[in-house]
Image 1: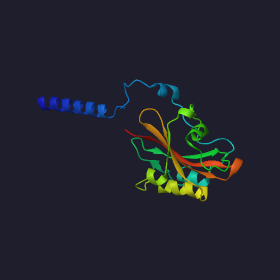
Image 2 (image 1 turned 120 degrees about the horizontal axis):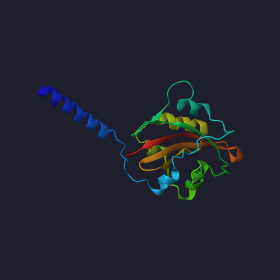
Image 3 (image 1 turned 60 degrees about the vertical axis):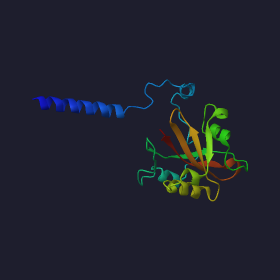
Image 4 (image 1 turned 90 degrees about the vertical axis):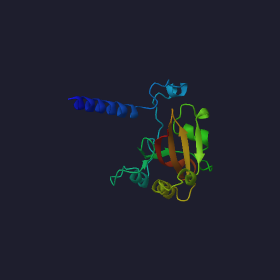
Length: 181
């Protein structure tokens, strides 16, 4: 009987270890003012009257042809299609503050937005399907990746381009949440 008891204790110890390993790493950490301000808010990816290009719907998994592409991080989140009205006024893609305002950031002037080249962002070629789809929609327009810092170890990556010119233009692409611990 003693061996059964020690086996039960070993099972309990192992389960306690697994429970501890699967805990949220931010558990017990006080929220920062920024996290409290965010209050779980999400940024807008689409808006009424702005059509999402089919190729983006398909690559993001909304076209019925598969599950879509996932951004590989600690969370493995799917990409979401992006389609927002953008009066580019001949400037092309927005700067960091304009981008933050466009996606509905609550404090665009102080948003932590970084602009990256797609080649630098995707050094291993994992997301060529996303980048190529965005490039196709933009028909030769510049493609950029905007990294928007979120609370704690979270960030969002927005792979976008412009479709059209002037007041009728759109900012289109795909975005995914990353958990970078």
